[in-house]
Amino acid sequence: MKKIAIIGSGPTGIYTFYSLLKNTTPLAVSVFEQAEEAGVGMPYSDEENSRLMLANIASIEIPPVFITYLDWLKTQSEAHLRRFKVDKATLHDRQFLPRILLGEYFRDRFLAIVAEAEKKGFQVEVHESAEVTDITATTDKVTLSVNGETHPDRFDLVVIATGHVWPDEEKATRTYFPSPWSGLMDATIRACQVGIMGTSLSGLDAAMAVAMQHGDFTGDQFRLDEKSQALSITLMSRTGILPEADFYCPIPYEPLSVLTETVAEAEIAKGAEGLLDRIFTLMVKELEHADPQWSEAIALNTLDADSIRDAWFADRKKHDPFSWAEDNLEEVERNKQNRHTVPWRYAVLRLHEVVQEIVPHLNEEDRKRFKTGLARVFIDNYAAIPSQSIRRLLALREAGIISVLALGDDYELDIGSDQTVITTKEKTHRFDVFIDARGQKPLKTKDLPFPTLRKQLQETGEEIPDVGDDYTLREPETLRGRIAFGAIPWLMHDQPFVQGLAECAELGEAMAKAAEKPATGSRRKLPFVEN
Image (tube, rainbow, N blue to C red; front, side, top):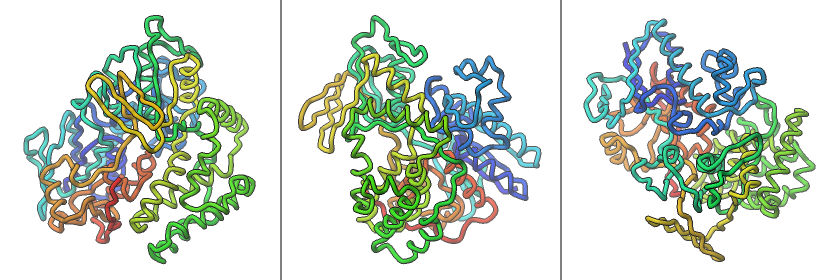
């Protein structure tokens, strides 16, 4: 049997294993998971999340593993769902539910994959509490070091599906957390001045993790404990803009009318010179076709790939972020009730997937322009958050314990042992506890945690790994086709929107194909641009 190793059993690893079941010849599959329980994934584990934290995706959007998330939920007992404040009688496929519950679904589906694989004649080994510490690839086989010891098996293909990479908990202190997943869930945060860098869902989750130590939500109200009156939480970012609530739209997505995948491929074939501007022109036509009234109101025909960002956020910047959140929440809930789709929002949502395909083909200047312009628009659009998260945010505001700070582009951040100090042009802000919740940053080859593989890749001179259509490493030639590289932080350079579950499923399906025959062509050769 061909021996396959999957490093990581979160969503990417699960969807890879699931896709391997399509292989006509049984395989020997070994799964290595550094956590105590395989098949959950860090974003959904009960160690890294509270029951209050919601997954930013509904059942209708989650690629099913044998059965949909909703169908699985319906098999759970009412008592179990009640632990998560979920009413079984009101379950529906557009519902946003606790992350830990989604983790239970993935764990259950992982075990179902194992059972089905064994039924099909696969040999399966699941190694838990097994951290892969090195990968050594030769011309014929790949060897792993697990928990510092050489593993006895030699593999034909190794799939790296390690997911997000956050700073180690060792870097956290009593007053500083380099990410919300660096020990915050287990830490005791006193009632003090708490600063959170980041106003996306991660930042809101960090705020909830702190707030829940000092009070409780009852319905849409938050009651602060008497002894915690000194608690003050400040969410901050360059713009001080809060995310909007998730909006109603048809799923699966309806096809675009102007900027289709075929049209985008034709533009890519014309070359990098002017590619970003040509694509933006087509975007304008798509949006004018979808929603002429909004396009006229925003003066879309006067904008370009750079000025679209300021126009997109202009109205929100004029308003108090909490007032905007209230109005947006009311609009979104009304639209959901009436099953009404806002055409321009839906068009932008569908466009981001097509436009992402041009990123590897942009020249260096246009990639920087894309990152500071269009990418911000797309991220704001597709990273809309559950309505319940907005309600909780407004409840904290009503309780007088949370505020939003716009830092601007020019500020200084000084993380001290006792306090974190942020200095803007106007004012100095001091925080007793500081949490960095800015999300996953793209990583380079030098950041790989596998010393031997890191050295091999660095010797190629490439700052990020070069992969084929099935994500197998292309260089150096000695290991070509033997390692499928599906680690999200290293893919974000040319796939800036790769972090969703649908993307994990697509990635897993592509990597599983390498088990039969590795791809011969290179997916893309991408110059690294410093962030």
